[in-house]
Image 1 (cartoon, one colour):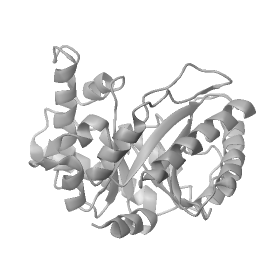
Image 2 (image 1 turned 45 degrees about the vertical axis):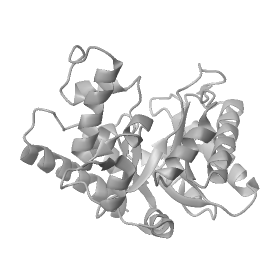
Image 3 (image 1 turned 90 degrees about the vertical axis):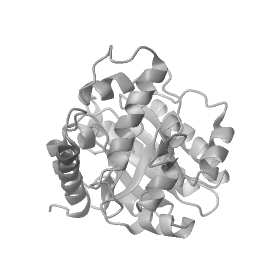
Image 4 (image 1 turned 30 degrees about the horizontal axis):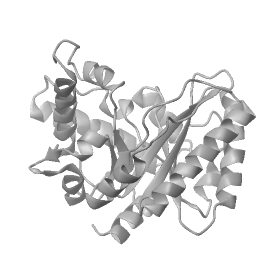
Length: 298
């Protein structure tokens, strides 16, 4: 796929984006979900080796193709690794899957009801390396816990600032101001975020487009103005802690939004499975998420 092919696939393709970007803090939990408990590795390198093996098994599964999975978000170490003897981004592209890279370095402590992204002093170097490996875009996450207007405005401002750096490097940013689905002020936060994003998108210079990765709104269809915004290439949704059936049911209520699930995609996979059982389980999850992404309920 050339850049134009990847852009078209992400903008118009039927399917969803797999989130395979668990970082250092979430890797032990991801491995435990996969059936590998702490103690199975002796150091950080061993831990990352095990999570890489899991991701390669997913990426190279016969169930994981560009027919239903249009993109995949990678952790930096995964991007730098190999699958089928090739750099992982190249292996994905050959399967018809558009590669993205997680660029944030974790979250600051909460202030004004939100957690901003930590500084990224080596961002330019990472973006250049990702571009050289054929990566299409980035993903950067911050978190909203309360409906605090000042905090949410700061989140959006930081996301757009980083997004503009990504665009300048020739990549497409996926802005992810996640709203905590357990927030007691979730509905109010949804509305404030919508208003701030529309305002920020309207004010962006130039004509380049960004992507948005958002928590599923409490009110179905609330984010339709973002789906239709001229500066948005695609809106995708995170599962946010919902189990797959509930995540898919909520996703199907939101026209124009496709999935970018992590836990909800991987929750039934176990390292002890035979290859046939693994492929069947992954295929069933892919089918369910694909359906929720492409067939919407009234």
